[in-house]
Length: 241
Ligand SMILES: [Zn+2]
Ligand SMILES: [Zn+2]
Image (tube, rainbow, N blue to C red; front, top):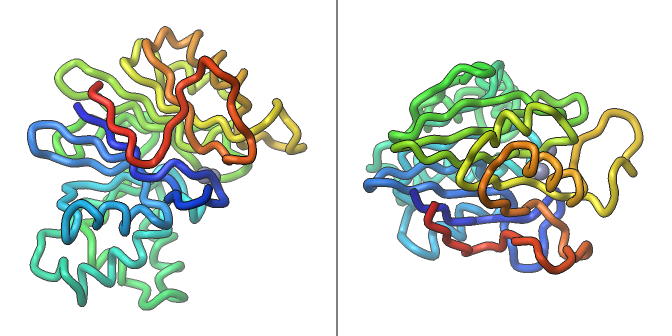
């Protein structure tokens, strides 16, 4: 499979960068993991409208789903009106969450109208664009949030989404070819209360315990440079996994 980092920014965007969006491609099928603000225009730089078969959302913080809103308008009234809509996989209860958000943003049924909306369940594999995805709940404040373990033809890519330190991350990335892991913080636990993000040392610890082969750090503010020796995601990075 091929990974393209479409957007790598954390909760506030790095200069010129989109927020979370990771495109997986294999055999002509395409799965987008998260769809934060800036992801859609980045995808449109390559084709008039992104030909994506499925989108899967880790959680409902804006930096992971915000560009679903303009995607709806493109599907309903714009250049995507004649295209097949992507499957849209959301966390448990996500359809209701989107209906509530839709009331404020356009119409309560705008998301279910535009996409083929589906909810996944924790630890239950689902098929999206020919990939098998296992969603695992991760610690992210009090938010319902998931990481994804994505496999195809025996190759595994793990994506943490947003997570604090959590033994589930080790299971998520167990033996993976590539672990795309967030590393938002300068140091462990400056947040107080329930943890929501990782420092580099914590991402590294989960990676080492998992036995994954390669670590790609992401969701990193540019104001917090990473010391040499780590691979850091940037918008436009393409990797064959
Ligand atoms: Zn985030
Ligand atoms: Zn988040």
